[in-house]
Length: 240
Image (cartoon, rainbow, N blue to C red; front, side, top):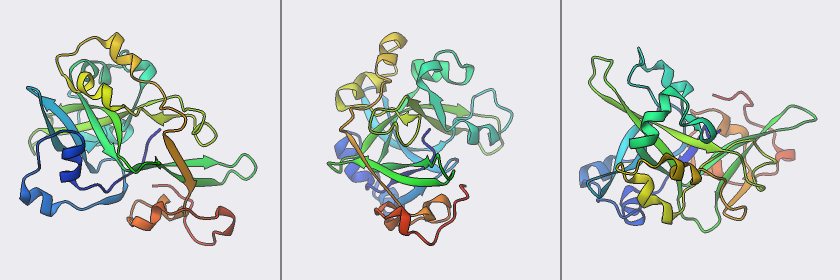
């Protein structure tokens, strides 16, 4: 799964990287980096309309249009690539409501077979570029506060690099796939599913990090720094 990530690249840099419209100055000034993004928080996503890409906020955790309330979103932060066309909540967005979720890296927890201890890792591109995660979005109109736009991140089987850490990984789309993925006129789900594959084994690096990341209330740049897990004496192993 993908349950936490880092979003620390300024929107104006993301706009240039993804060839999207620049953000308004007022929004740019109000933006703050998030080093421990958690479900139900607002995240930046890239969508396309009439051939123009835009960076917009979406609530992480897809809430289907038919849902009675927002609570279901906390359980729908990820969609499995293998069954995305079969699930009622995801099949329609997969056809017409796709997005990219740009992240600097993401966190995953490796469970020790000997002790059951969960060791967090930070996973990132070695070249420092953002990871473009495949996402779906939806609009929920069930509340009194107006339409709420939400999203989910697609996951697939891990590549050889990530397999020792976890049995799932987010789908990372390369630049050549962005155009057709973001084109809401592209309805060839057979083709789209061919994009939902593990990233190349050498694309993503990882290292163990401090267990302070386990608490979503900890939001610091140093959470990404490598540590010697055997030397850790602080931290909280209780996730969320």
